[in-house]
Image (cartoon, rainbow, N blue to C red; front, side, top):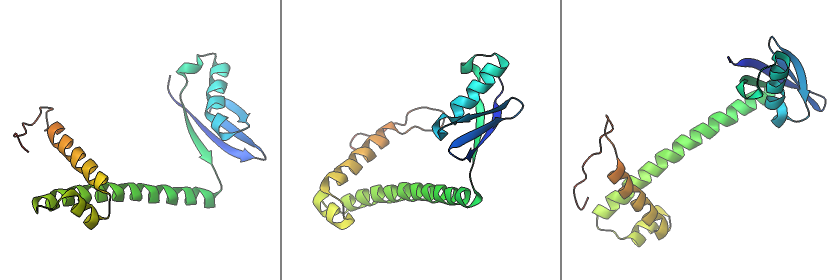
Length: 145
């Protein structure tokens, strides 16, 4: 069954749900909006609830919608930066090991615990062993690498 489009907005203490081409219903809480929209389609069209897909848009005042978009963009940026920092940290651990620094020395320099250095090295080592090349074939890792 093709997806239905619905929008929901707050009126007083209720959420009003309008499913395009089907009708309207309401829900007491926002976590019930999707269920109520699907139930409306299923009941109105006499189709199984499980077969109904609804694309839902929650409408909020413009200032809140913008604030949510800003927060999501910031969270996405933070996730990218966290990933980048983790990769830099992994590379630095490898580089410092090549300079013959031990785990405690690396921990002090990077301001992490020695346990974290061990985790980074373990993850890096398992990543090297499990890395795949295009086409899905495993790359041979030389002994001692």
